[in-house]
Length: 125
Image (cartoon, rainbow, N blue to C red; front, side):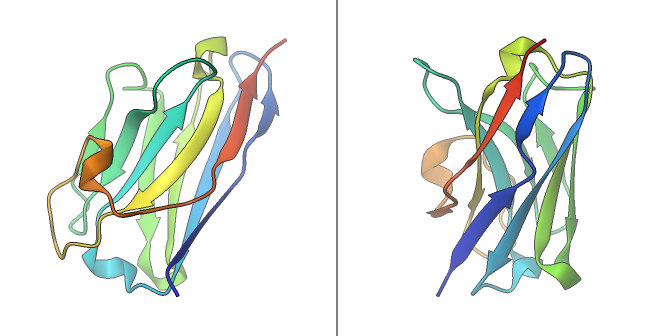
């Protein structure tokens, strides 16, 4: 059974860092792109980052230079390292899997087929 489980969220002060993890089960991660999305209160869900099966990456302009996505296929895990966090980064963060094989990184929700439940990130002093 395919399952994506996010962890690593929490409360952090502005300027701080968090490392989110997305553990994928029921899927051979090697062949699939994984994306991170976020949804802030009252806003639509937006794409944050993506990593393809060949480690091509995408970053939204709002996080570029502050966020790094990586993957460990042996551990079936994708990471999102977030630095220099700002209050506007506050959101529920979701990871999502593209079930197509060796596809380029997607940037929009319809390009992803399976979703985790999300992890809350709150940036506040």
